Image (cartoon, rainbow, N blue to C red; front, side, top):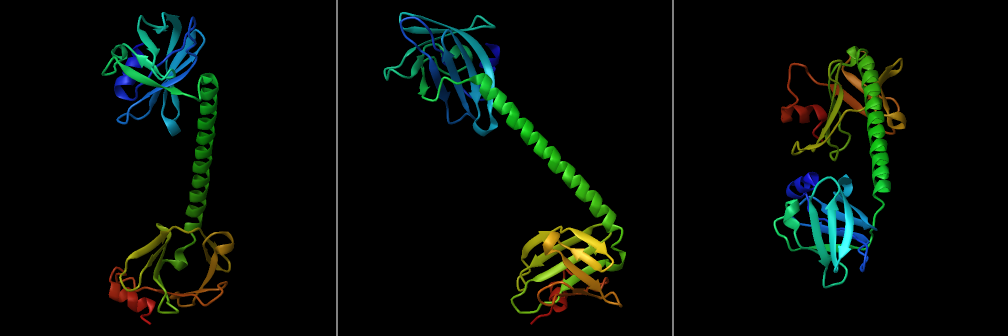
Length: 272
């Protein structure tokens, strides 16, 4: 029962078993402590039992297999891989179990109550198979996500090589006094990035790495149906949206000036 003892001292606590004879202990019993990260569950079915750790959303972990016997109203739980024996008896509530020698599995006291779990006994083999299936599905989903991200990054890297004519820091030309201050950086190395700030305080509202594509018609920024198509002026100082519901124009910042200067940034955006 070495594994069980280690588990009880490091993570969570609890164990119970069922037996045969004058009293039927079949069922599940839990020991849980607020200072621990889970519960120890004793799962008894006939003359066999097992103890597993229940960590909630993190799943379960098998800890020990036990042989069950009963004599004079006492429940004896013998670890199949060691000489460790737990001894229990029925609690006064006639449902839970009192552990009489819990120190043998690393608990701080002998006399501990293992609460009756009305959901037991559990089919642990089924639980473990379901858990393995869920973890496999989660792993596959994560791998698929990583693959999509890698493909998208590869596409962005290819498109970034076409950004040369659009390179620079661009400031949205505010149409009303309620518009935020929006800055769009377009660079082959750093690709397309968009920041928005509260105009008066310069507190950041959002930061985005939108999708982008360079086409024969101009630069698309955004994804799918929401993508905006911008044309570049002949002097390469103005970006104008071609498919927006209302006029949207961006002016190119002076590369010799710093847009972190809020006065310059506000002046570029238009202090209405």
